[in-house]
Length: 270
Image (cartoon, rainbow, N blue to C red):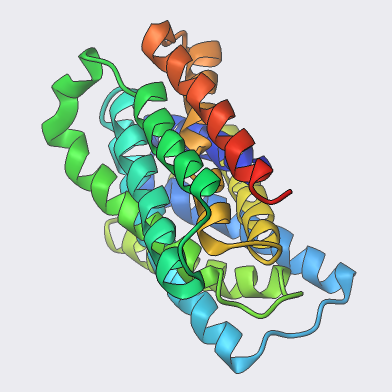
């Protein structure tokens, strides 16, 4: 859940920054900040270098992460955060849920019910009728972002147990290289007045990645992936608190579903 809270905050600040500056530049700078932070922590912790297999998995994860973040921030910057979040969130959760079933077997009945409640929560907590007016501009990038995020969760989740910082460093190197090249190619080099929000996006996104990898190495892929995918709850609550977006009965019901889903999934492990 720490991953969901942190990623949700990162997506909020990243989307907010993208309203005032280039999406590509926001992603490049925020991911670069995360790269420096992770590398510093890796050195200070004395973590062993990643294996060759870990490097391959991490590089693939960086590719999918770069696509996902860029497309998601683009979707968030094109209108209300309430349409992009549910589409992206549900697909993000679905990919590791399906992969986990194939790789680790069918989840327990309680976990399965929890997963379904989590999917429902993601949809309810971030959607309303007004948001759907922007579907043509937001749906495609939001859906593609969800697939990218989901594949990131699957690939980074394959690294060796006990390796946290350096696999994420490799992942970030790939992401930053991709996005920075695209940003420079389009001539996007300024953050305007979005420096603080971009920095916040980088810090929270880094925290989300670390907490997810920690959870993944202590449990099932589908469990860690689905719980981490509840990040839209955090995004929407921040949008309500800071931007004044309404919560309403539907979103309140979604938050309740998220709490129930978390309880069921965790109870299944006792």
